[in-house]
Image (cartoon, rainbow, N blue to C red; front, side, top):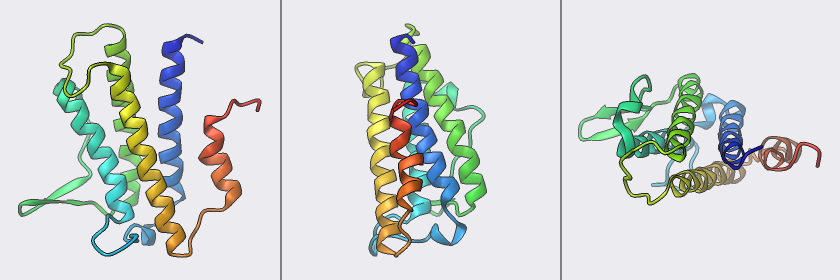
Length: 166
């Protein structure tokens, strides 16, 4: 496996972790939050999708065609949608767009740099950012007595980073 293949595989594993968590959630969990004034679970998921879209826009806005926002306008604000099926459907779309952008950028495509010096910094920031939100969602569930089963976590979160034969 080439280094590029390994980098893109790591991104796919990252997306699979977030998707597995989104699939595990129920609609009634979307409004749970750590504390008053903090993001609820729906806002965390929609924020990840929105952040992917924003970074894609900052580098090559034409790549946003075909992907929809997960926030709806509400006066001067944007409000996260509450439809879990739509959220689940949109997350893989934005993950695929980030992957395609990164692959083209690493292959030498001339793209705006946005705030990133290199495509790898762009992708690693995405991984770090999304991992933070996955951890926040897990903490919200734990605080509300709905902690994820340890076996589920091992298989769907931590196990995705390990070698398949480990």
